[in-house]
Length: 117
Image (tube, rainbow, N blue to C red; front, top):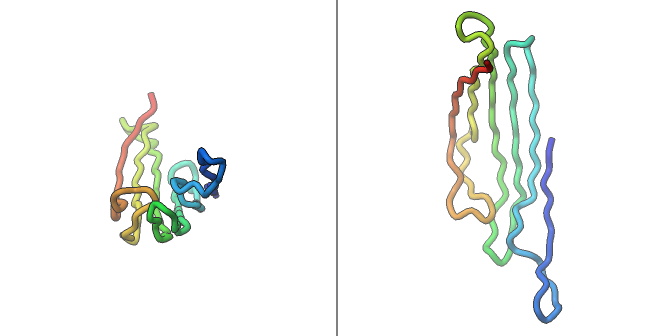
């Protein structure tokens, strides 16, 4: 679990203060997983951002869900290699994080193969 909670103020030349409008949105992330032996690791992640309403225009809150799997290859010429597959934004949610100029990408699938030698 991780959290990001931000707050801040502008200090104007006159000495007055007001809320700082370029702060990232408060967010909370939670990852839950299961490891099967030393071969397979599965996880689910949820990221929740609080809505923001400020002088920059703000953004509504959102939640995004991600799935990941890592398979450790332990035979053949790929011994010690890892195959990783991830699906980000599983439900293809359309959202725009606070301070971003464009919407975030929709569902995104990533596959990687890495080896240690």
